[in-house]
Image (tube, rainbow, N blue to C red; front, side, top):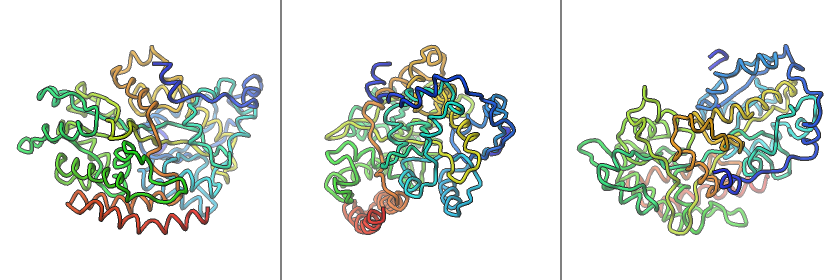
Length: 444
């Protein structure tokens, strides 16, 4: 893609709000700011293809007219984008000034290599930080996600992705089944709702290697363990709790999901659910928008939204996050910072929320009752996001070789859908990845 065409108290209690740093408060009190300061410059923006990036590109002219800065934007499929920006950063000559980053995958990699600039100094500059930037509006969890262990804030939060439960109201009502409160309820209901003679299945979800780990982690978060690493950052992906989560994953996808689910990523799962062929789909909130599009979805107006069911020990949902960074090598950091302020500004964050493109990193969007009341999404959808913020935990370990981890563990999980023994597969995957992690930790 190129230019032309990403209950109030409950939320604040769950997400939290950081107080604006003194320098930011000082900057916002000044009157020297000029949106046109970098008029005439051109910046290149590299984004991951998703509904939020589409929103940014569709509204890009707004930024260009306001600033006089021209933008060349591209949106690339997720896996290819991660490979592309890592290769370009490694050369020392990235073709972009601004880059969208999946923090749950690349945060530690980006931070260790210092690929992106620390934006704290930019925020503190009253000549290039808008008076209404309102840093305090970003949720505490989102800011923490964008901050490296050494204190450098090398990205600006975009959105926080929670896994939620989508369900087909019509299919559940036909058998008088309520939305599941626990994972046990979910499996039993999915079994009852599966009717292979009609090609209707109780569940659909990610079975594809790598992509499937974030679904598996949703089940692991419900156990006593709740993580892939112990307190000494050692891998613990073959424990009794990890095996329980694997067994649950196996039976849900093997017993209650469509044929070929071992090759499904989110997009195949979304298509199946949109066709009315699945009762439950556990995945990221950012995939909601097409479900309510009556020109594309057979389930528009029939979709229910709920928090992830409770596990045997805990009740959590997996949380992931994205943010925008400015390339350290960019010679246009000022213009790029202008873009970041606009891209993560209140207007775009509200567009994300009301269109169903994702859960914003800013808290103000959730308090805009007028916009929410006019959205095509039900109050149930917004309440689910607020409750998910309260019970969320990171869905992946914060490590550099997270892609290799997802590949290794994901292969084991995919094998179980075909009938392989869960404990054996997880033990092999753990033994294979443990030295990779240990080497990485020594180098960090």
